[in-house]
Length: 462
Image (cartoon, rainbow, N blue to C red; front, top):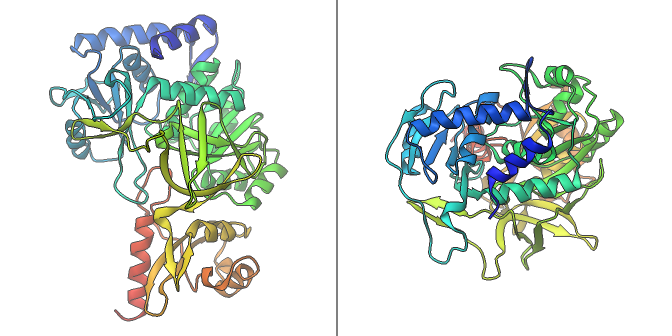
């Protein structure tokens, strides 16, 4: 069993004088981090929290949050990480349902007691021991209800190890934490830096990403496409080693623009159930991703991406039990569709549950979105189906464009005709809406589907 105490102790011993955490002008070395964790452990033990207890945490990224997590993992306490923007009462209800004993919603204050911990039991046929459980994270819920995903420390360790073997992380490197810790893509940065002796940089509250890059000059950065668009718009440079880019469709034009601005972008494909990355490019600007060490990928007969390996989650937590829905030989069906070429490079086509049928033809909206995003004047695009009497469904598109003059459906259709068959070309186009409900770092597709239906009804006088 991979033990977090050993991982942490090795990092402190090997990188004692290196900076572990930085935010603003505050810098904490690995040696100082060890002291802070021991102090925090005494406070937590005084509350009666024991190994195996489940503790909810809902807080924004900051140094204290990282110290708390390191402390809880060192104590073998299960941490259930919530989006702090969710109403506190809703968090409390979910935390109680997960068997959490306390909720840390104000890191500097006393945690709120919830309920006596409900023992986490293993679903029949499970292959992991419950005491290995370290974290409970939630899927984005972009295409349905979020699921509670259970990981062990070993899952996070091998995720970070494989990532660092592909994109090296070592002193005095620093990784800017630009994604939320409650999401697996943010949480995984903590483990990568801990294994490599790098600095975890946490921007101060309300510090903009472009300002944080200038302020801290990090060597590594994780982004989704929207963030990279904004950085390029602001003319940001200076990331010297790696920008990990994932979370959705990535247009070639964006990679080209990044390369022209000397930004080393590595595209990646991952999922919460695999503790972050599964396949990542091994050179900046490459259009395909290769499976990382400690993971395996294969494509099913119907084109679905199947995964397994040391990073595969323990299972979904529900009603006091952990269940892991895998095939007999251990493969997990991701719900994503893609292809593997002869060199083992992965291309993701879309999601099975996003696919819809129009006039008897299968349509993956991500394929259309990718072509829209290749148009330099489009920042973001979402394609969803609307009901149609003749075809069953037709695709419609929501577009975030540079200027109002760029919102020209006729010109967009003309460009799409060069790269897509007619049945995949949206006939209706809508401007990008305001106040889109959050679905983590991914697009809330259900919101757009409902909005498209509402717009269609209004247009038809329904």
